[in-house]
Structure formats: structure tokens, C-alpha cells
Image (cartoon, rainbow, N blue to C red; front, top):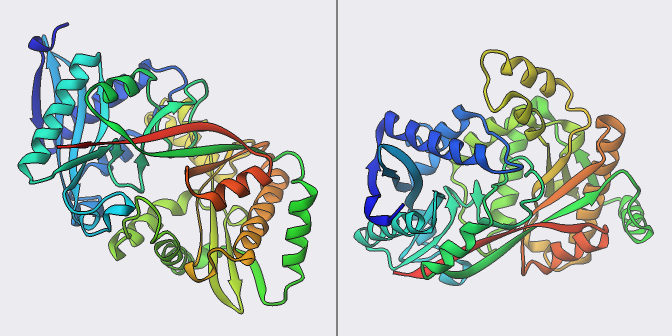
Length: 385
């Protein structure tokens, strides 16, 4: 199929968004180890009327078509908050994004990237960063290592060939993200146990489970710590109050108190660690469809997600404690409690940390200390426009 036979179409509205999602689902269905996601969730993420990300962002969706068949897709989008961030933190003035990249072959991929770049130029952007689908808090990066096993909850999964196609279009690596496989069915090393014991003897420190009966308050506290803790990190864009409320509501069904921790210092929340059971375990069974019977399996799983893997997607320690012994101690205390609950209460044997920035020495050191193994690698690319 030659690139001359390919037409790139801008799509919008409910019908266009539906075709965009169906294209992605079709590509995912062909990819070994891919897990079908809930279509309703995929639709909501790209709906300006439902996702508060669009309160500070704008986007254009594109489909590639040839011979009446859809053969690829891509989004081009601009986050106005990201434009205000310091350039040394990844975004900054003039930086737009592409995401949701799928293509039948390299020439189609190049045509899609060109369409996204042209749209970004028309919006006065001078740099493209991606893939980021669509907020940095959703699915950042292209999977470049780890295609041999299924992704956990809220992690992207992409063909190995895409890396060469993107680099062939003139993109360079801007940042690498890691995930780590953690064998949680055995105790952590003695060093970690000593660090945890020392923290437990500190009367100023309390590590407790989240209280789901007052989840709105707990979620606001967690996400406020997140905004503070990550504010100097590469790729950081603050969550707005609307996004905090939205995120809290979306996460509530998969929040299980024994798996989510808040650490307090002198009674004040200063750190958190969230852990999600791997819902992909059940999505694979129902093929990502709630009807006619998928909802039954999903509700049953949500009552008690036994034997599921566990993913730690987010943790944070207030910035005032960064680079202190207490910061790493709190992390070890929370992850130790979560490990014990995962095994004892959910019969889980495997955990995953991530994503973690390649230059986040503190988190990489924690991952190494608990004897975890880097199992997946994602790359975010950049190109001057």
C-alpha cells in the first residue's frame, strides 16, 4: 500500500470519536498480549464534554483511510497548562503533543505524524512531544520493551515496529519511563524490614489505610500531595480542581482500603501510595465489553479481586521531605504494608511499580532495594517543528 493511496481525514463529533476508538480497538485486537479496554472509558477520555482535561486543552483527531478502510489514527493536542511549565521540565511554550498513534505500515505512520505536526504548526507550536495519550496523567510514552507480556491496568501496549517508524520521521528520545516487576509473594530483604521497623518505632509517623467512607476528602488530600510532590518532575502538569474531583470519582470503584496508604507526620498527611488490582485480568475475559454479560463478571471481580496482580501507579512525598531519609522510609513503610495486604487479603503474587522516570534516582533505588526487575520501558519522543 503506497502513501499516495492514503487519505488523512480530520474527525470530530460523536461519530468521529467512535470511529477513532474503533480503529484503536481493531489495532489492539491484532497485537499479542494486548488487553481490550472498556469502550465507554475510551470514548469518555476523548470527549470534550466529559473529560475535564479539555478545560485547558484542545485537540484534533485524525484517521487514515485507504480503499474505504481505516488504516491508522493519531491525535494532535495542546495542553494550555503544559505551555506554562518550565521548558527544562519537558513541556513549556510552543510544545504540542501527539498521541493515540496506530498505523498499518511506516508510510501511513509518517503521513499521520505529518498531519499531526501540520496541525500543531497551525496552532503556532514549535515542538512536538509524544506519544502522550492524551494527558500526561493517562498513558504517556510508547512501549519499546516488554511486548512479551500483557500490560497492567492503565498502561499502554504497542507494537515494537512503531519505535522505528517514529524515529524514522525525525523524532529523538526526550524521556524514558520504566516499570518494575515486584515478586510480592516473599518478604522484602532484611534491610527493608529494618528500615520499616525503625519507622514504626517513630512516634511522629503514622502509616494508615485510606478511609473510603470519606473518599472525596481522602482523594483531595492524596492529589494535593501529588501536585506538590511531583511539581519539579519532568513532564509535570498540575491537576486542576475539576480533574481532581473527576479522578477521585473514576478511581473510587478500584480503591480497596488495604491497598492504599497515607503517611502522616505529626498528624499531617505528607505521603501516599496508591495500588490498583489489575482490572486487565477481567477485561481480557470479557473482551472489554460490558454487554451482554461483561458487567456481571466485572461487578463480581470488584467485590473481591482475588489473585490479581497489583500495580502501584502513583506515590508521592511532600517536597519539603525530598532528599531526606524519612522520605524513603515512608515509601518502604507504605509498600511493605501494601505487600502484606496484597498477599494475605487478595492472594496476590505479583506487583508492578511504575511508571518511573529514568532519572528519578530515589525511586529507582527503592525499586532496586526491594529486588524488583525492570520489565517494561516506554519512550516519549520529541521533534522540532
